[in-house]
Amino acid sequence: MNVILYFSDQQRYDTINETVTPNIEAMADDSIFFDNAFTCQPVCGPARACIQTGVYASENKCYINGISMDKDDDNTLAKILNRQGYNTSYIGKWHLASDTNGFKPKFNVQKTAIPEYLRGGYNDYWLSADCLEFTSDVHGGYMFDKDNNKVTFEGVRSDCINDYAIDYIDKYDQDKPFFLMISQLEPHHQNTANMFQCAEGDEKQFENAPYPDDLVGLKGNYKSEYARYLACCKRLDQNFADLIQKVKDKGIWDDTILIYTSDHGCHFKTRNFEYKRSAHDASTHLPFVMTGGGLAKLNATQKYIGKRFGGFVSLLDLTATILDIAGAQIPQEYQSQSILSMLETQKGRDHIFMQISESQLGRAIITDKYTYSVKKPFSLGIEKATSKLYKEDLLYDNTADPAQHKNLVRNKKYKEVKKELKKILLEDIEKIENVKAKIL
Image (tube, rainbow, N blue to C red; front, side, top):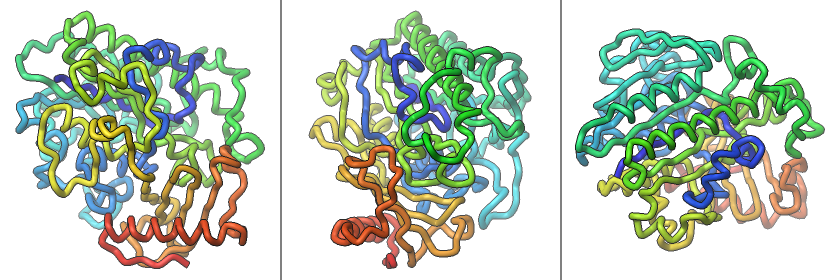
């Protein structure tokens, strides 16, 4: 079974709708939509490291941006798939090779070729830049191929990334199944321009788009940026549709499963000083869709085709799920859980556990009703991966206040609720991080 992971960057859950993503919506009869998928770490590099390693960021040590993934990890996603007989390929943003922060000696390949030993084991096609936002913009840029050659491209970035993926599929002529990860930068803001960039004129279709409730009434830059952001999402929708058409034209639709998701969401500087790095739904709730003719060949997925799954799914669960689809054994040390097993039992995770860094050293859980978040006092979450001491920070009743405008963490009426949530969170921290922590 071929597996394609189509990965956007900083895309909100609510951007999947008939207006912004009509092509994805039109795929509903052939797809499984996951309504409660959340990130495990709302920061670009750590979220990617979790996918490649199958463990939380505190355990793979990539707890902030600018820390390279362990080159000696023999159980990365690609390396296991290689041993399973797959060809593994990667196109786009990597964000896991440079050591510009953290505890390792400084090593910067943000704008240069990524050495083979820092590519996580991908063994076939490779075309990537460690920090694609520094080597390109909406008008073009460059990446580096398997042999470290600089490859330049001109035109809308997401289109170009997609064209490379389409070309790979078109020319693929091996008997081996393949895993292909396509890591787009859109709709992430363009760091070098300090704004969201879209193809010229694309934003006009969204100039009068209503703002999400969670943004309305808060300070931030959504009024100036939201139209361009949605335009980027719509362009990705067309990209994904074009890729699917190539899969069909190639004649491999029935032997392929495609997964569309993102690393984290976007709150447009309404909740802290930038776009994510918080426990709010806007920052953590993900689009997550599985499609492809291959769904009909798996017992776990075939009964859900054309339906929605409401159980909790973590971004971390991508790793075990892809390995499960490939028939590979899931390593014992993995904290990732297979979504196939969830579909079989018709039950997702009991709740979501999340680690947060770079705005705080934080931990959070999301349950059926509440979001509860804590953070280490006087820390920006850049100096260490874990803590033994936290202070309560956020509590939202997501049923009564889905836009999360009312922080109840100091409300005495929720004393017993907090007590129960605190117990769950402390148990998670001990189980996942092997740390006996205290919450004030």
